[in-house]
Length: 317
Ligand code: CP
Image (cartoon, rainbow, N blue to C red; front, side):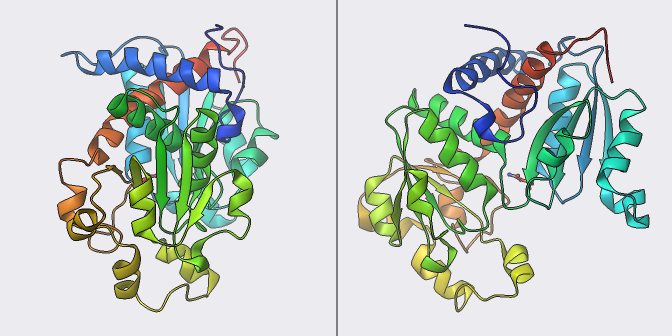
């Protein structure tokens, strides 16, 4: 198997074949071992400069990418739109080209507009990694989620994963569906009809509007956050109240006891505690939420390392 990914950029999970994902996971296994050492650093990207461009808020992804880059000895520059000249009307391409003229090799970008990374990849020479583009995709989240399932259950193929919540606004849901199906998992999407994309079944998944049914079916329940900020942007009310949402789609100990099932519990964060999941379940014995965050660093190290492996280091820019 080739040790180089079959893609120049990671814009969406569809850029990767199942073999690419397996390569990322095996590479991440090695980096996880590095991260367990007293000195958690390797010189793999010593001559590479990476710009982290965040045009939308982030805690986990931003810190995880920055740590991954620093553990690989890359030079790192961070950009936040709230303190930049985009506030003075500069376009995305002008912003990025100005940064690239300072000899940046790779760009990790989060942006509120779906497709922003795809657009950028057509206008600049650097490798682009999508760190979340609006309601479209979040490919490294899907990779770290699948990696965490593989670590917990020993495999992804054949595992039944229920993704629960605000599917309509979730880039995590779309990337997870594509990633998990490529790896041979079965996927069920569960949520209110108002928060389910009309063509969800065309993604090759099961659809349920009954959380108990989804829990009885699944080995893994990935609980998603209600994205109130995107719902407000739509100017629409998708359900009567958070209290009602929580009663119908919130995960708590009583519900798990009632269905008689103890699935592995996941959540990409940030968690709305007491809305989609109670603290008791989020912090309980079946939760791998913090393992997801931990694995994110190793998985992102693997993605950056493998993308850089396909770069011509003699002709940067
Ligand atoms: N999971 C995730 O993308 O979290 P952040 O928005 O904090 O990066």
